[in-house]
Length: 270
Image 1 (tube, rainbow, N blue to C red):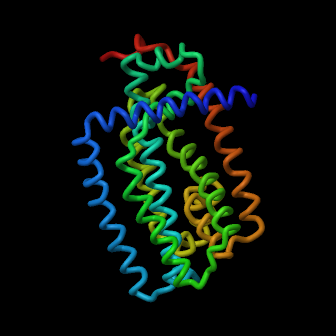
Image 2 (cartoon, one colour):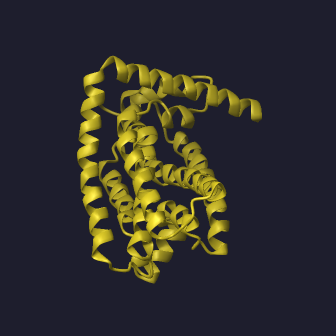
């Protein structure tokens, strides 16, 4: 099992290197994407300024603490859009035009190759820089010491949360095996993701519980921030460890189930 994991990590390294080389070959597209993403980011920075200057609590969170949540959301958005978003979008097209056939015959996990085919580094840089800046600034305003242990624990929490975000966002794409296209459900899932611009504490208790445990979209950005702030309860640590296992396991199981409905490109009219 360890050998298989290392082999897939080596494959992923090759895929990332190829993605970077392609983007450097067409640098205008890379810089255009960088400028466009920076433009989108300005709206988040304006929102961050409003949060800090408004001096309004968000369900018990001070504005500076809410800024840490927004920073985690921005940072994770950068990683998700860089490494997974484009691949998720392309799954339905791969199913319709037959490219998935070529993926499935390769000597590696089909789900891995579909999920990690390429990366968009221009989408990562602005979000990562702004997200880290908001987290650090919010922590300083909240008088939270950024010790090595706290930073390390937060990074682990962010990694675990990213795996849950990947699972939540790719699962709706599996509907393409039956319906061929997933535009509507994709828009819905991204609208749910954007709810994280507001801390979960600001929502009603029922909504908060649903978004933390049933569909843990709130857990993804709130738990790393709460851990950094020292506000994560004991059950939060347990769910932070359990949620990736549950949701990644569900993703693998539903992927295998969906493949049973796949009849190659011949099943779809162009």
